[in-house]
Each structure stands twice: as structure tokens, then as C-alpha cells.
Image (cartoon, rainbow, N blue to C red; front, side):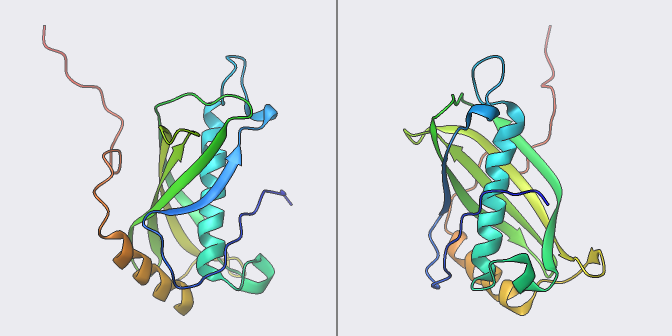
Length: 174
């Protein structure tokens, strides 16, 4: 089994707007030949935020074993890159819940450097998943209630300009 860093936070009912569940540093093996964070590892950092969010909304059941197979899978990702990060640089991730229903949720992460400047964004669609049946499922009642509460708290945030974007080329006029 893959061992990953786990960012555990207790559920207190207090919901930050936006959430700040991950603080980390760029690791040496994440740096590419250009001397900066490889594009794939921006997604690594954002996946740490996915896990931190998931463990937080499931607290106190913050292990796979404690959740009895009630997990999530990622079914879609969109990453934008806007700034460089180098080995050892501090990073934090802002997370907000954009939308959810009874079995899906969309999170939006902003990867920030030590000065608070945005280095990347990641919009991700989660699907409730039952590891015992290997099928999509509905959120557990605890998760569904907490998603509702988070959505209410995050409704006051301004729209994220990168959210919902598609990959396109602007038409050029001659």
C-alpha cells in the first residue's frame, strides 16, 4: 500500500472560509530538471488536500479501517499552473467546497507559496465510493451533513476565476 502524508484535523464544527488543512514544503524528489516543482507534484500537493479534507469531514473516523469501506474516488481533475515553487519552499493549500450532491462533491484548491501568492489551482470532482462493493455509493449521513454545513459556510466566498474552466485556444484575428 502506498504510504502518504496525512494531515489530520479534528472536526469541531468550526468551518474556516476557506479551509487551510495542508502546510508542507517542496520535497527534493518533487523537483525536476528545471529546478522547480514538477507539474505532477502540484497534483501531489492537491491530493494531500483531498485527503486532509476527507479525513476532516469523517473525524473522528480518520482511517480507512474506521470508515469500513466508505471512501471516495477522484473522477476528474483540472490543474492550472501560475507560479514556480523550488525545493524546500513552503506551501499551503486553501480548499473550498464548490458544489455537492448525495454522491459527488467538487473541491477547489489554491496552492500558495510562502508569500501567499498563488502557484497553482486544482478543481477536483470526488465520487462517494464503497470499497467493499467497488461501486459508487452515497455519502454517509455524517459526511452528507458536514458537506451541507461546509457549502453554507463557503457560499460567501467570491467565485474562483479558474473554476469551471476548460482547455481552449482563444481565436486569433489576423
